[in-house]
Image (cartoon, rainbow, N blue to C red; front, side):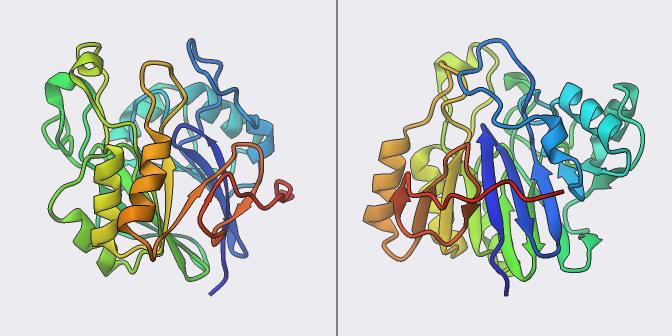
Length: 275
């Protein structure tokens, strides 16, 4: 089993690379008002990736200007997104190779690289949270996470989600090695601004414990002033309750080998791979 590498792009964005290829998940690179973390890469840096995986339609996950620019630069790059969003993507000018993802239907992107879509529990607006999106026009699972089987190593990127009864069992069935989970939680104050929340730090740790993952990486925090997550508390919770689980807090400007030891800020300095 070959060990993949990843680079955090801020919020829920990651580059994940291995011997079988490179994918990008939820790249949020536009100069959006209020963002606190500048984009560490540009679409030009992502050319040559096999695919972009989109978890759902919120702008910090489905950044259409970034996706359209990347498609201009690399017409062959595939975009994987929840099946109900295909029409939205096409009407927004994102023509070309689009793959509608459905939970339980694996997507083979290359030999040694398979994506397993997993349902997420989220919402477009607070009024329809927290569901799987089945109630929207057209039906289907509108919010997804993905388990990437890359060279035999399995990484779960949850997208935006809350926990639900079947989730941990599904991750165990997929023999998931590592989990990238949001920790920004939710609050009445943010929901009053129509900000649909996520797992809290404690809920992320609990999900990781029940999923049996060996490596846990927090995400979806520190991008916007009003939607931060308690990073220090998260790390301490892992250390206290999951002594056999490695927690890693990645930097946004370096490529990081996954098994890195307990480490707030421990990084392996590696360059962005060649296209």
